[in-house]
Image (cartoon, rainbow, N blue to C red; front, side, top):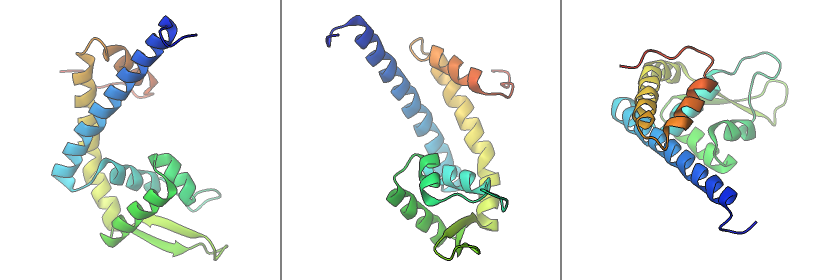
Length: 157
């Protein structure tokens, strides 16, 4: 294959469209979360991931698992956790069975903020997808995203 191979060109075009869709969605959600809740997309994602932990076997995530879930490096995730901890939205504590392990849990204030921000996140996502669906280049990817959602989509307005 060469750089001008039609298969590679199509692949590059598809990747560019996917990247564009992701960027537009993330920017739209970022603006909504920042303006209404003083949260970034990454902060929201971290609170959401950590809020799903439980005390059962495998219920708490290690920092590398959290980093993978929010698509950040381990060091960037640690900085993000520290920022949210400083705001009183998270708390860290030693693992009761392994004193080397540190758990991070969402505080009551963090859970409250997450619940307030969730409708904003969901509405901004829907708005961004609806906007992207009007773009012929992005519409097929929007359909793919919607098809991957197991819950029925609300009617478009």
